[in-house]
Length: 502
Image (cartoon, rainbow, N blue to C red; front, side):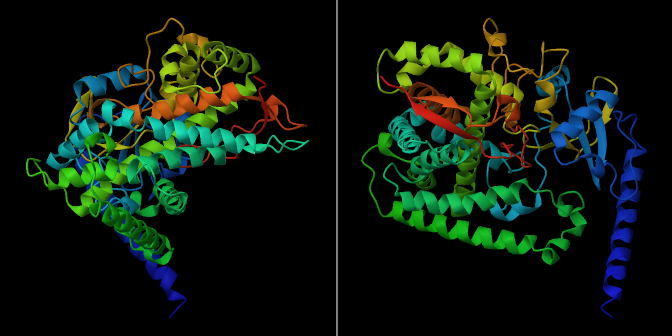
């Protein structure tokens, strides 16, 4: 009997596959024309062509099949957009039709039945959630209120780095670890309170680390929704349930603590205080439930922690590989502060070259190179000839767009000077650079993440001279990318810091 189980499972999978493919074929025969794409193979379609790093594999495929490419990923039809012109056409003329979100398996649970802004279906709740994030949680005044937190946590990061320089033979600093701790602490204190204890931040960091792993992994159920039962066998359901339980207990604890305290004024509110106030506000279009409140917290942490940490590490890695750029950046920072011990946020607008460096880092290393996938809500026509079916999963390949040789000269080289007389920015108005997306589903947390990135990089460059450990050259720096929705450097960035004598 036991030996028959794999065979029965195989028959079940085959039956489901042919029934699904029959429905898909019947649906597509009514269409005039789909965009070009590679040939499919039975059952999996083009899944095998995603590769270990899908944004790189899809970029290569687009060079053969074009800027608008159609794939079949298991039972999921998919569209890949790989040029600025095509992205502009969609965002300007079809943004509403491309405003849906696919339902990804772990997020049903982890995002509290898709209550986070990033996972919510387009509709009334999504509009209300976006209004809360844009006008309340990520508003310029709210971000400004967290300035002291950013300054304190960057100072602590500098102290951690300085502690490695006291020995006769300085220990290389694991910048990947130090920077992730910085971004997590900033977001944790902004969410849970400026005086949140280190133990609270560390506890959440451990739990959230597993949440990030679960969110970034490829799963059979995301491409064969009818095979979700496999996750009960392979341990995915158990991991999701364990992580969700820990996350939920943590949220309950900190939310209960906030309910029992009094906030003197809106300027001293943290993010949970704001959400609890809005929950009580009878004037809200939609009353926020406890589950939705927790879902919105997930957006804050995903946007605030991952993006900032990844960008700082990639930027430092590029600087160490490009000594002339590093030297020019340091000269600008040190000339600007004129002997001060640290860079303050009021100094940041003066650091024009550093801003160019960060733009170039976003260009070569967009934090989410395929952005967050979208889904079409209705059938629409692109370029007056291609019909895109409803329920098509859509990937905007930001990595391919920002290294397109038709747009960028020397596209694979790190050249911040390319932005010296350029108006191109990363906030969703210029389609050749889309690290945060654009349109309705563009990331609303840019203003929250960028001050952390700029302040951290400026102070790292001010306070220390940086070099590679002995025996390692710039050419040896491993720039391999890790798999995930947010792409981090696969191997930690370890550098030797020497304090600058002032």
